[in-house]
Length: 246
Image (cartoon, rainbow, N blue to C red; front, top):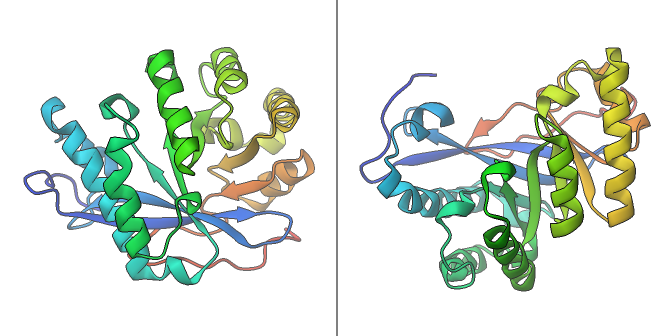
C-alpha cells in the first residue's frame, strides 16, 4: 500500500472485513475500513485531515461506507454494516444522521443493520457520549465500543455499565497470543462474564490463528474478526471458509 493523499474532495475507497458468529459460522457484520483512492492506508489518510475538516471527512466516510457496501451487495445479505466514526465531531446526533438514514434506505439497509464503532473512549466527554449513544439507539442504530480492554480496562468497564452499547470489540493486543497468556485469558473471561450480564455482545478483533480462535470460543466470545477468517478487501464483501472446527 502506498502512503499519502486523499483530502481535497475526499476520494475514498472502502475495504470490508467480516465479523463472524463463531457458533454458526455465519457473517454477522462487515466492518468498513477507509482507504485512499490508490489504496492508501487509513492511518496515512487520517494524517492528512486537518482539524477543521474532520466533520466533513467523517461524513464522507459514512457515505462511502454505505454506498460502497451497497454496491458490493450487502443488501442481499443479512449482515450488518459496521462503521467507524468520530464522535467528537457529531454536534446533533439526530439531525446529523438524517442523510445517513436516507442513503441507507436508498440502498435497502434498515437503520438496525448499521453499527457505529466508538473508539478512544477515554478522550470522549461522558455527557456527549451519553447523548450520542442514546440518540443512536433511538434511531435504531447499533453501537459498539472499539479497542476494549486495552490500556484503560477499568475505565472501559465503568463506561460499559453506564452506556450499554450493543457490542464491545476486544482490543487486538488483548486477543493476539491469548492462548499462551494466562493473564489475558483471565481478563477476557472477566469481560465476557460482565458483558453477558449486561446483554452486551463481545467481538474479538485481531484473530490471526486457529489456536486463539478456539480459545476465544471456549471462553464464550461470540464473534470474531481477523486475518484468520478473512483479510479486508476493497470494494468486495469477503467470504470465509469453515472455521468452526478450528
